[in-house]
Length: 238
Ligand SMILES: Nc1ncnc2c1ncn2[C@@H]1O[C@H](COP(=O)(O)OP(=O)(O)O)[C@@H](O)[C@H]1O
Ligand SMILES: [Mg+2]
Image 1: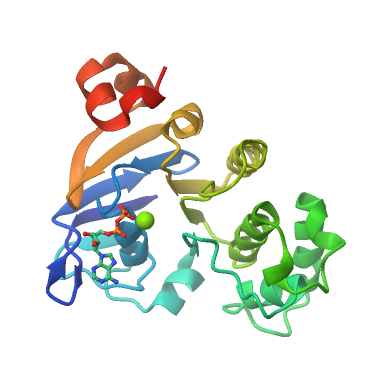
Image 2: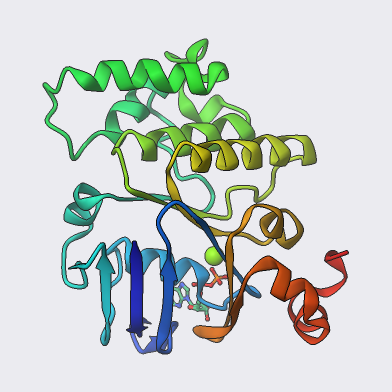
């Protein structure tokens, strides 16, 4: 469904991706793991068109998106749930959801219905629809960030560390949302620092190091590889 081929991204002169090639297959959860600074967020930004790769290409279902604007990329079906759940804190929950539909025509009558569906999927958001998003709990903000991205009706959802800084029970809830979305057919590219949880939901895993893929395989293959397990995932994996 989504492929990057040999992408290299820079922040000014600082090279953050160094020939990164990966694929997220349709209907699957593909997970990116790796140490801080490995280039996980940069990969998400480059796919979303926020940063441009100097080389290589990005394809969504055989359509090349490498040089498209971030807005076009959302319209083509790629939505990002950014790291640190960058919702609009001074806007209400409902205004955030409306903002997620920015690539759709504002008089599209199905937007209201989709907001209703988001309240069904994320009940805590409904009672807080008029509350400022910045006053929500961390877990609720993450739900809102996911719901806002879903308002774009994406083919693939990019999620950057959705469990970061959340209490263990809330992390479980977020992972159950991820699994449920995937069961409903949403393809997911997930960046996680919680390797143990990620390996439970992933179909395919890429380990990133210094801006490129150092290993890829199924969760089973990672579990079978003692060296990989120890070097990249530490004691976290049982
Ligand atoms: N805004 C920025 N300006 C300069 N360098 C950056 C910026 N953001 C990230 N980097 C660098 O790019 C590399 C990859 O960062 P990032 O993609 O955020 O890693 P990860 O998400 O895996 O922790 C790191 O070396 C980081 O220091
Ligand atoms: Mg990051």
